[in-house]
Image 1 (tube, rainbow, N blue to C red):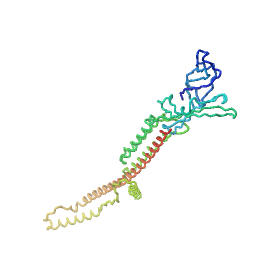
Image 2 (image 1 turned 90 degrees about the horizontal axis):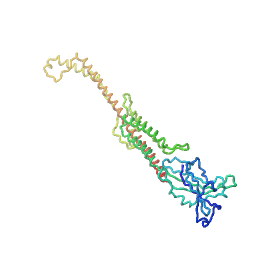
Image 3 (image 1 turned 45 degrees about the vertical axis):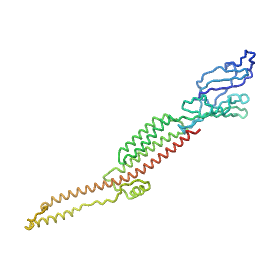
Image 4 (image 1 turned 180 degrees about the horizontal axis):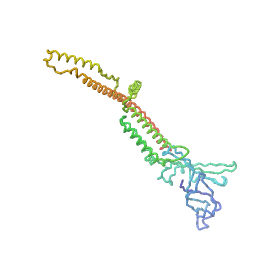
Amino acid sequence: MIYAILSVQWKDEFLVWDPKDFDDVKQISILTNNLWVPDILINEFVDVGKSPDIPYVYVGNDGEVRNYKPIQVVTACSLDIYNFPFDVQNCSLTFTSWLHTIKDINISLLRSPEEVMFDKSVFMNQGEWELLHILSAYSAFSIDGNDHYAEMKFSVVIRRRPLFYTVSLLLPSIFLMVMDIVGFFLPPDSGERVSFKITLLLGYSVFLIIVSDTLPATAIGTPLIGVYFVVCMALLVISLTETILIVRLVHKQDLQPHVPEWVKYLVLERATVLFCIRNKHKFGPLHPKEVDVTQYKENNINSDKLNFLCCENPKHREKPMGMALPLRENTPVVDSILHEISFIRQYLEKRDEYRDIAKEWLQVGYVLDVLLFRVYLVAVLAYSITLGTLWSVWQYAE
C-alpha cells in the first residue's frame, strides 16, 4: 500500500484566455466533471484505495491544466524475502493511458530523472522502510502491432530497517546457542548436562512458536532467517544427542566390558596427539592378585604341626613365645576365617577392577566429548560467520 500525491499536467488549447480581458485573472479552479481529464491509470493497481476525492483542477490562462490529488494505491509487488530482515525491495508503479494511444496522450516527467531519483522530501522516513531511490523509465508498447501506448515506469527501491527484527529474533536465538555451547563445560558424567540441554531445546521450540507470526509468509521461497532457525534447532538436537551418547558411554555399570584396544589406540593415543587434547590418565593392563587359599591352608597346617611339637616337648614349654599359634582343634574356625577374608579380598579386587574399567570409559568419554565439542563449535562458528557476513553485505547494499 502506497500513499502518494499524483501530479498530472497537460495542455488544453480550448482553455486559453487573455488575462487583460478578465481583470488580470491568470488561474481558476474548475470541476473535473466540466472538462476533459486524461485516463492515467496504474497497471499494478489491485484494489480501490481510500484516497480523498478532489473534484477541482487548476487551469491557467495559457491552457495548462494541473491536477493534484492524494492517492492511496494498493498494488501488487513481488517481494524477495530471502534476505529478510536485511532485504531490499523493488516495487514498480507503471502509469499509462487505458484508451488513448501515443498519438493522443504522451507521458513525460515534470522533472529530470536525476531529481526524481534522489527526491525524498515527501517520503515518510519514520516507518519500517527506508527509501533508497526511485528509478524512472519511459517506454512505448503495442498490443496489436498497430497502435502504440506510452507508459512511465517508476521503480521504488526501499530497504527494511532490521533493528527491531535483530533484537526480537536474532539476539534471543544467539543467546540460546551460546548457552548450549557453555553447557559443554559441565562434566561429561554429570546428568545435569542432559536436563540442561533438554531445557534449552524446549525453550527454543517455544521461541520459534512465538516468532512464527513475525516471519513473512510466502509460497515463493523461505527467508534465510527461517533456515537459520531450523539449522539452530538441528544443532541443538545434535548437541543433545552427543550429550546422551557421552553420558551413556561414561555411565558406570557392573557388567561393562574393558575398552577395546583399537578404541584406546584411536581415541586415547592418536586423537589426543592430533587434536592436542590433554590426556592426564594413562591406563595399563590390570593384573589383580588372586588369592591362593591352598597356600594359606598349607601354612596353617605347618603352623599347627609346629605348635603341636612345641607343646609335646617340655623343653619348649618353658620358653616364652610372643604369639601363641592356634591348636589343631581350632583349624575349622581358622579355615572359615581365611575363606571369609579370601572372599572379601576377591570382592575388593573385583570392585577395583570395575572402577578401573569405569575410569577407562570415562577417559574415552572425556576425549570424545572434547573432540565432538570442538567439531560442534567449529560448525556453529562457521555457520554464524557465514550468515553474519551475508547479512552485513545485504544491509549496506543499495
